[in-house]
Image 1 (tube, one colour):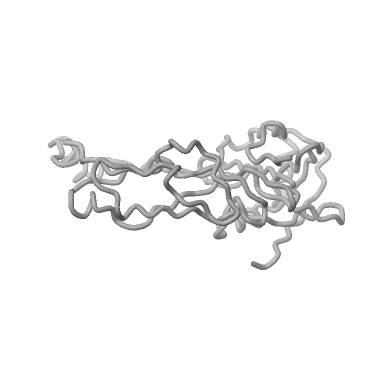
Image 2: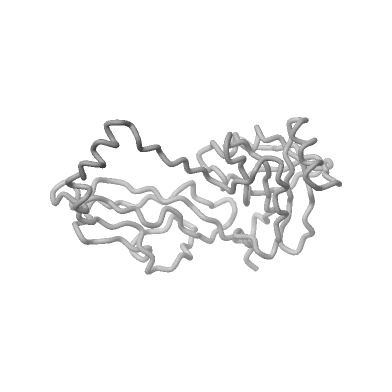
Length: 235
């Protein structure tokens, strides 16, 4: 994978009005922090951060943040979105050490069509879409694939049953259910007349789901506290 370098500027002032001026210049506020290090306010290009989020590894992408002539190896810890247009408003970066393990959340991808769906008429209930793993920053997997082809009606697959990628330890509770196959509910098999009419009329509106936190435009995002970071460095 080609090296990714994102330019950052020092941000000495904070507050709602300062953030607005930054965005008018095509930048967004952010903070860089790490274990036993003081947080550093910065400003970065939202286009570059959005490009990282669209990559295969998404928010778990390892890249360099160039600040004051020095490069810091970081990972995107958190980002905030404007709720209407979905524009990036704020980004937090966690500085990592390549020789120390960290904890991150990795997306789960289900693979295969279960027997309980093909033969027994069930439906898949995808319960846990992310798992917390521990590994070196360079070993973070883009996703964890779980094969559910053999899953029968009424059966489930737990964290304890899946194989972790090489050099990766899954730290999510082993008893957590990833997915199971359930019988369709009565209302899903036979739609109520009211539901049928509403569907034909196009009355149902889809729910829009976005990754990351959303804050109102103009609102100053909360500065992070390093000790509460989800991605924490292991001693």
